[in-house]
Structure formats: C-alpha cells, structure tokens
Length: 283
Image (cartoon, rainbow, N blue to C red; front, side, top):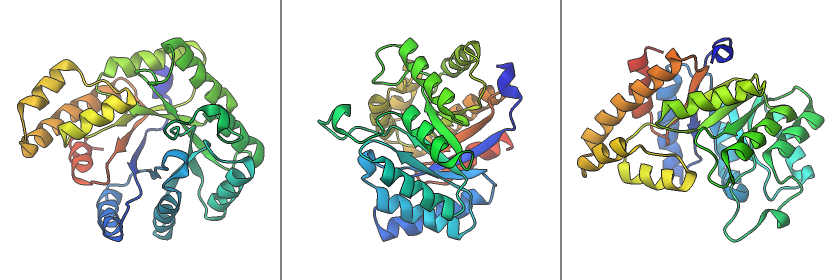
C-alpha cells in the first residue's frame, strides 16, 4: 500500500437527510459537535431513485449556509442527462466542489433497462467530466468485500477500474470489519495501476440488530467472532457501544498504520460514537 501513503489524509463524515423537522434539529446539533473536530467534509446521502432528493437538497443547503464543505451524493438511476446536468449546475452555483457519484439502488422490481439515460456509475462520472471538466472532485464507491450484486470479485474490480478511468478523483469504501479485505483490495487496484486514494468507510457499532440488518443488505461481513461477542451483550446497549468503540478504534488504527489515506465515518446522524473513535485515534 505504498502508493496510498503518498496521499494527504482526509477524514470525513456521512449523514443522511432526516425525515422530520425534529430530526433536522437533532442532526444540526450532531453536525455542530462533529464539526468541532474538523472533518474535511460531510457527505449527504441520496435515496434510491432520488427518493429522498428534496430532503437531501435541504440538508446540503443548510450545511452550505453554515460554510461547511459538503459532498452531496448523486445517483444516476432514474435520471436523465438534462436533469443530472441541472442538479450539478445547482451544486456548482452553491460553491460545492465535491460530489459522490453513484449508480444508486434499484427500486424494487425494476431492472436497469428501464431506468434513465445513465445506468452505471462510470457513465455518471464520464458525464460529469464531459460537462464540468475539473469543477468537481468526484468520489466513487469501492467494495473491498465485493458488491453484493457483482457476479465475481474480478468483475467487481473491473467495474471499479471503469469508474477510475472515467475520471474518478478518489474512492470511499463500503464499511467492513476485516482490514485484510481492504488491504488486498487496494493491492489489487495498485496492480492495475489505479492510483487514486481509496478511503476506508468506517461504521461505528452501536446497535447490533441494526448493524446485522444493514450488513446483510449491503454485503458487509461481520466476522463470526464479532457477531458472537455482540450477540452475547443481548440488549445491553451501553456495553455494545463501549465494545464497539474499542473494536472500531483498533480497526482504524490498523488501517492508518498500513497507510490508508484517511477515514470516512458512517455516522448514522450521531456524533458520540464517531467522536469517541476520533479522539481515541488522536486525529
């Protein structure tokens, strides 16, 4: 991973748009606490088929009104080129310099054939570059444990290569708990000459049942030893959280020692768990 050591480390946080006004108030308080430690940017998610679009835009607008560097997610599934161009122009007008370019989740029961003019993330990346040149730093997704819909690890790596060659600036991975999966993925990328920063996605552990559900859906493996330890705590949320902070801190420390070019925290709109890990690491 020597090539990853050459990049300036970037520490960032991901948020999702709240569904209610009360949720937005709570999110704003969490952002204030997280902002105090100086993350490089906050990314804001975007639901399947743009299903949370207006709430996402509202969250992005509030972050920008506070002078906070923001990286909106943008998925291409279900969108036309004209619509995508308009969204990107709006981002540019707001002074946004970074976007997270994704294919996006397929709405239930719908195949790729009937959705939009841009069907894959590499097509979205190429479109952004063709329309806006170097105006945006483009983040893309990476999957150290293989995308759940990929037919093989080799084809998943080939898909990632297409995104890089289309003009991706850097990548953020799906979260994982096995550091060797990340290290081997990076080595595979380096063998292909894919010289962009690949930042590990980090999921704090606070709720085992929720984590298990998310992990089953996105293909992130929870190692058996970790599952068993978490199951052993039952409903003791405080113990799960304390144990989770220790486990994830150790994971992050290993990744940084091995040369990872930063960390991207999936905060779940909570400040406490991410801040505990952040402070343990001395970032």
